[in-house]
Length: 387
Ligand SMILES: [Zn+2]
Figure 1: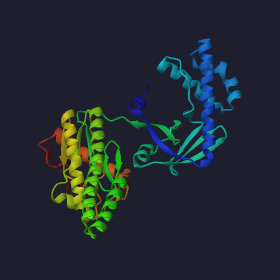
Figure 2: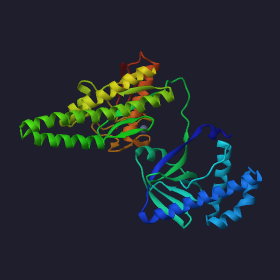
Figure 3: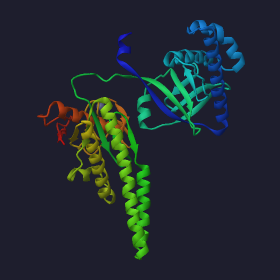
Figure 4: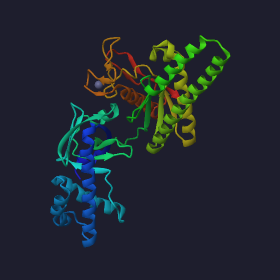
């Protein structure tokens, strides 16, 4: 194993494919043929008790290509799939037409267009990816050479792309998952997870509209309906927050990490969230999410750390630089692009990374009050304390 290999780890990035209806059949045919090929190859391997890739290749390659009409590399991948599967499960297995393994010859990722090109039985087809900041961040600068195209029971198509990412340094710094709270995405973590707020926002806005029209009526029936609505709205928000907190704590447990939040109490919240109409609702929603997380974290033996939220969204999480012009930011909507070191990332996840770093400093140096300075010599970030 070379030095560079030791410093990276493989990760699978699952991306939804936008598949035009007329292409579905071409994919399905390829999936069917790939499963057929695997089953044929498995039959030969079992009959001849041959589990060596090269030897099996000589026996099955030609007949499988002829009978299935698959491309050369599809058949090679089918052989690998059979051998790897036999090693992994060691039992008789029938392959179903749900996925196909792809390699550098049958698959290509185009970063600029956010597309993949996949070789099907019928030829090379390009697909747009339907992906978010997390996937884009992981795929950035990657030249992946292996992927799996799969079909779900619902009939959606996904491509799982294998990427190599640098392994997290295993130092003395305690692991901390930073959580950035926002309006567009309810929460984003330094580990790259995010929870879309659009569904919650839409539901809320619908309730607000309905409530306004009911309040103007002032009848008994309207009042009753109003009470029922607010209950349902609360339960929906509760349900969302329970889900997010559950996943947060689960991940923290897996990574043996603590969780850091921004301390959004008091005056600091108002600078973070400008829209006044939503302030109260969001203050409550964020507080509830923190409380739910804290409750679950306590049971799991995980610490919750609160950090100062100032500058967390404006600071580059790689070089700790903020825009030298007061009032300006390297943050442009969904994208953070550092003008100092060139670091580019999903802006909420960049914020979460800052929160994680602050949390880490706080755990390892509880006595420290100042964390970093920007080039203007101002205080950048400083931790607050543990819950
Ligand atoms: Zn930077």
